Amino acid sequence: MLYTMSLEGHRVMLINDVNRGNIESLLLGGSRQFQPEQIKVINSTHSTNIMACPGSGKTTVLIAKIALLLEKLKKEGSRKGICVLTHTNVAVEEIVNSLEKLGISNIAYPHFIGTIHEFFNTFFSLKAYGIYTQKDTFYLLDNEEYKKYFERFFEYHKPGYWSYPTPINAVDKTDIHIDKNNQLRIISRKEGKDYSAPVLNTIRDMFYKGFIRHSDTVELANWYIRNHKEALQKAFQSRFQYFFIDEAQDTSIEQYENLSMLIENNDGTIVQWYGDSYQALYSLYGKDDAWKPDLEESLQINYSNRFGENIAKILRTTCIEEYSRLEANNAISSAIPHLFIYNDDNKEQLLRVYYRTVSDFKAASFETARIKGKIAAVCHHHDSLEGYSETYQRSKINKPLQSEMQACLHECHQSLLAGLRKNDRRGGKERSEYLKNISQFLNDKYPSKYNELKVLWARWIRAIIEEGDESILLVDLESKNRELIATTLNKDIDEIDVTRIHDLRPRLVKILHKNTQSEPAETVTDTFPVELAVELNTIHGVKGETHFATLLLESVRDGVSDMQKIFSFLTGTYQSDLIEESLVKDTLKLAYVALSRPRYFAGVAMHEENLSAQNIQEAVRHGWKIVNVEEHLNTV
Ligand SMILES: Nc1ncnc2c1ncn2[C@@H]1O[C@H](COP(=O)(O)OP(=O)(O)OP(=O)(O)O)[C@@H](O)[C@H]1O
Image (cartoon, rainbow, N blue to C red; front, side, top):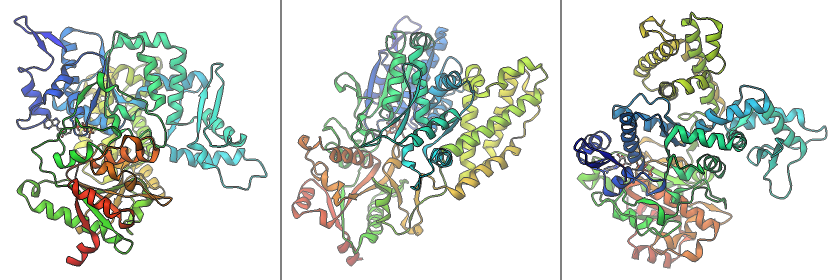
């Protein structure tokens, strides 16, 4: 446990009876308090894994811990910092915003808070690409965007006899690798035989022309770390006192390998991985998990703030390991689990029946009537969702593709650069400091201010897409922009000529408009009549969310129902002998993620053909309520 000296000379813990009240009221609200397991994690200062159940409040715990450690390092006058990595911009935003709530907004060097990709790109991949190709920029593309370019590049590489469609799947089944002799290899992961030379040459050509996928940047970082391992380990160790990884289960094998190289032989940095390995969706389809915490040696948070006993009860066995330690929040009266049974004739009515059942449950008690929250229906595969709703469609709004976001952020950087140039009266030499690589310059010199600006840019872009209120954001942006320019140029903020944020807007709109017209995005909504406000999504799409109600819809592939495969788990019997089958294991992971989203209402929907009379009896015995869609429709 972490102790610091109090004024009286006693050793006190990082979070203690004196300082906890303020943090708890700001982070948890009301008179809520951290639970004992959470306190133990906040106070732990050894390198370890933290295995936290859904709704355990692990991110909140991590935020409290970061705040307290920042204060401690400052008090001690330490020159070492904290590195916090997570997997999405939204998660970074959550951490930065919550720290702001606690009065901490100037998180500067030596600290770093960002996504794992940003971490690799900032410190390794960009440098690696520069060294390897003698070029100083690349376009980072998500897979969909990369595929579009692949099609164009392939035209130049395909042989004259080629009359087949472009082998677009090669994008998902090839990796770059820089070998021991520094040779770039394109590796095929295609079953059977390798991709032919034209495909591999296309990927190679794209690499050298700067068209890069996320997986390529991870390999570039790997190459760089491999080649400078000892020096980087030392630099890492002397810069960071603490290294925290949130949502550790989402770390890929390659990312994990890179981080492991950096932190091995390191006794100067405390490393803690926070996550829930039972929710690792990265490793479906026979892939191995990267982060495998040894539960005996991990700190654990098994108490969920999210759901009551009726939901915890299903999750204890609907999990890749039997999870008897999972504790429910008894202040929440979750409904008993519901099994919805449909047939081909009434499948289209299923969601309506689900919605009515949830609404009736919600209206029946004072506790639930006032609670807001999503009513969701989720499924493993996009295409299976279509079978449940004629009107289901992949939404063309809400979430920009990674590449659109990149293009918008590029414009934002250009606008900042213009502002810097306009206000800079100094000579070319000083200017070239930031002109060469603006993002690297700001990351090295003013990481915290730069991070805040990036968060605002991201929020603004989202507000433009969602047609939300931009006014407050624009005021904040204008002032952050000026502040960063003033700091960089060592001037007073009042001397800075206002940069024209508004001029930037049409450029962003153009990028977003162009793409929303032509591209399907990843988020899914349903254009149901309003009275049927059920949000349809894939399970991957709702990771990390909290719902009022979640219905897990059966997905049938090659005539096999995924829910039938795990039926005994859903109804209270953990069958270790079945777990080796990959469909069982994957479905358990997915079902665990899906059924741990709701606070109040969890349900599963299955076709009557996939349920035997014995199955139904089992379910009833385990406390499930059966809703037969047919009967329900007849009674309304
Ligand atoms: N001790 C507590 N008392 C009451 N509420 C809490 C407590 N700790 C956390 N919470 C609340 O629980 C919710 C979940 O917290 P958080 O998002 O940090 O959980 P999480 O473990 O990251 O969830 P998941 O694993 O599902 O992503 C938040 O609304 C948070 O404020």
